[in-house]
Length: 156
Image (cartoon, rainbow, N blue to C red):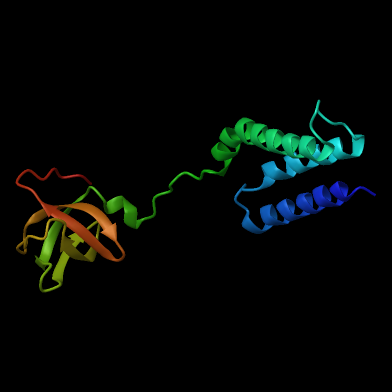
């Protein structure tokens, strides 16, 4: 039996196992290329002045690249999961009331928003007095980054 047959069978298994382990659609295109190269190997076909081995490598590369180009956009569309906001994500953009002075240097601060009290830090580093209306910029861990603005729009 031809050595190249074993090479391409091993490549199919290797790329197939890698695909199963990673679950990220990384090497499935190489499985297609190795299958095509195995077919060329078993048929004994050679391209012009190229040797049979060189023809197989060329077919492997071309089929792998073609499979990637043709199927990658489709795979990307099905593999990309939309961001589903959690309950905490909904406070981003809302107006909050400062219940404890927000001071990044002293690591203090709390705001009340959406019926809950959150630990807060100033997004720009400036202290914000209690009783001030602020806008929630983003969440970092369990802390809200808030921004004081003269014109805070109330969003519920």
